[in-house]
Length: 406
Image 1 (cartoon, rainbow, N blue to C red):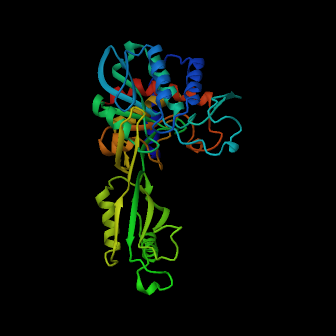
Image 2 (image 1 turned 45 degrees about the vertical axis):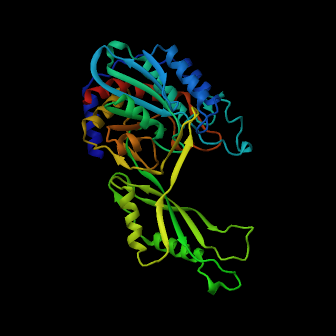
Image 3 (image 1 turned 135 degrees about the vertical axis):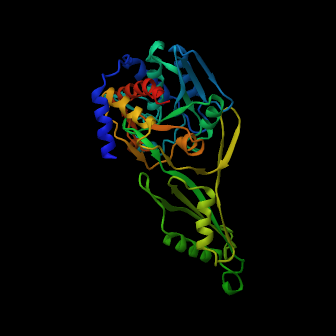
């Protein structure tokens, strides 16, 4: 990887820095503040969508619209032939949590000492504001093909559910997912799956446990065996992760004095490239083959969009990474280096909408955005204005350069 980075650096040194149009700082900061002030948990992104759509319209995108799910899409057509590239960031945010943990209103969007504060400032409204302003700043005569800016719905609950709809409609040749990478170039990510193990027993009065079969004890044996299994490893993504999140039994209190007839154990599995629902579940079928009375399945997840559509799907999201030596990755690294940003090629351990774009649909995909992942989902979330501008500069460079990879 280090050798590849040196090659990218030499390539960039041999090229003139690309002529990027300046980004209007006041416009960018104002847009992010408005986006943060629009509280938007999953399924309630309407106001954020209004703001994003209005910004794209004001910034003279050729066409701006929403699909049935409520995703916002802005299109800019270039004067030169080329591919369709899609730049995306999700509009939904996680809950603010305990208000007493925040120094200010979690949705103030306040600018304090060069930093914008509020839920979603880094994850990922900073990316959304930056990519909208960046794509708008590129002169039409410098655009090859078509550029799309997308604000997607539902990522915090069901990664890729919103973006899948957009990709199916637009059929882009490449995708850049906006997430806080510190303006470093991520070429892959771990996937994610929620797996539910269900142990089946037989109820009895707890004063006579020998007359029944305690499902909790069987659940404990499932946990013991699962915890002892080795996890697969990938040279770029690292080792998989398997973490128990929840154990629950039936019947629950206030029914007392009864041996549980069922025990469920919910696990979070972090996936490497190539794993499928079938391959993951097969590991546990083999390891628990001699244990009677249990089953395992990928959990279901879903939400209702703010447009009133119910989305439900297996909670399984593929791991993936791009070949570091590919023209797609080389063009991206070169673009960032030419714009004064060190590429910092890496893979991220968290899950993104790229699970659909790359892991499911096989599209050339990158993850890039301003802000640090350490700011995601925490009190006093913030992003610096300088980082926001750097992200916009990076998006503009990627939008111009990536079209040469096809």
